[in-house]
Length: 406
Image (cartoon, rainbow, N blue to C red):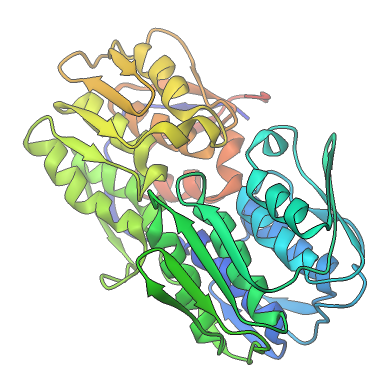
């Protein structure tokens, strides 16, 4: 799907969509607990992948009632009910590999070609050290446990999803475990979200020190009814419409949230006041929209950007390519990105979404200022399927324009 966005001004009040990060985690906990409910879930492609994998991995049974999911029963140690279809969701694959390893039977996880190029070495190393099966064959990962409790050493600068994945599985093992994180630790707020989700379902995982998480064994997930809070990651795109000349109020956000992406509020303020240097080690998903706002405002230097290469796209490189169409110079280095302010103009050719939801939404925000066409706009289904409907309600003129692979 391609879209054409006419130059138009956003105006109105809108709720932030539900947090994908919280939804992943609460769904996994609820499925493991049984007799639980998760309310306020948006059925993005990534969340649907997690629901499918919960059903396949441990036979989780659930019923959907609008935006609510009611879980009844599951068996984490039973034989997998089928292949785990992770689609393009890195969170889903990285969360479920350790849960598969709790079993003493083989599990097969499938993912898109792009997903399977993203790092999985942390789990490969653990499996090799414990003498258990981990094999990567084309579009699938094949694993077989059982995983043994103990001490797990994990790099802190590849992805916090590996740490969260272990946090879901280790409480189910017979012995106590520790996750020892090699510095630097990036994206710590996502680990805190996992801890919060576990706590809501009666499972304890605690910081022993700044780089060590202690997890007691033989724990059980206990039933609970929880609601997914609003998502700061996707709210940033809506708030950007306000910062760039609209009049938009975003509601349904928890000011006390553990979400690291709530940093965008202060970061946007800094972008409006000058050309700041912003470290995004704890909030890498904000990079595309920060680059976009900076392109219109005063420019920015982002640090802690190395991991952008292994997202849905090479985000630094593709954002530089698309911002060049707006006349904006961008310099991408190994761990820094500099966007120069003062050059922004209407794009001279169609924009490419690069099959990356956050790139598409960032381009859409910029097109409200200039007009423009975005190829491959269907990528928003990954995290925010109602994005274009939402900005239409705010007065943005959006028109579908045929089909595209993006």
